[in-house]
Image (cartoon, rainbow, N blue to C red; front, side, top):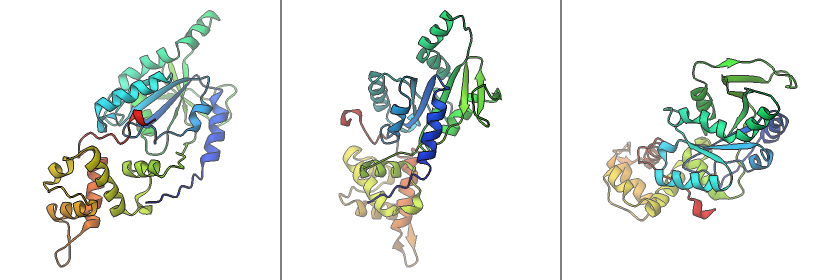
Length: 282
C-alpha cells in the first residue's frame, strides 16, 4: 500500500508557529497513544526548543496501559512532562493544571525573583490533524473559558483564552501535518483514521490490519468475530464477512463491507485496547 502525502498548509503553519513561539512559555503537544511517534510532527522539537514541553498521550483509553506507561517513561527520559489523557471522556484532564505548573516552575521562579507575581503561564497546543486537539482544548477550558483580548506585541487577530488564573492558551496556531518518508508511518496513520478513507483501498488497509493483529494480538479477531483463524488476511476478511452476514446480491460475501466494519471496530476500541508501535523500536 503506497501513500501520497500533500502537506498543503505545512509551510504556513510552521511560519505561524515560529512567529508565536516567542510569546509562549510551554508547548503542549498531543499525540495519539496508539502511535505516539507516527502521530508527531518532527519539526515541533526544533521549533519548541528552549521551551517547557508537555506531551499528552491522548486516546490513552484505546491503547494498552502497559505501553502507555512505557511511552510515558520514554518521553520523560527525553525531558518531556507527560500525561495520559482521554479528552472525550475527560480522563486525565484534572491533573493537567498541576503538571503545567510543575513543567514551568523554573519560569515561575524566575518571575518571582524579578518581583513578577501571578503572571499566567502562556501555553500553545499543537498536534497533527485528528489527534483530538479541539476536544482537548474544550475539555480543558470547560465552560469558564474567557478570552483575555489581545496582548501587547501580539499581531492583530491572535486571541488568548484564559483557562484559569494560572494558565492562558494561545488560540490557536496552525496545524502541523505529519511528515513521513517511511510508508509504515503512513499505514499506521491510516489505521487510526488520520488519512481520509476516500483515498485508501479499504480492503487492502483491512488486510494490513489483520496481518498486524495476527502477529501482535493473536486470537483477538477470532474471539471478536467468532471465526477460525486464517493465515491469509484476505481469507480472514472473508470469514468476518460470513460471520457478520455481509452479503451482496446472490449471497456473495461483501468483503468491502466487512473491511469497513473491521476498521470501524478497531478505531472505536471495540477490538480492545491496542497499541501499534512500541518504544524499543525507537
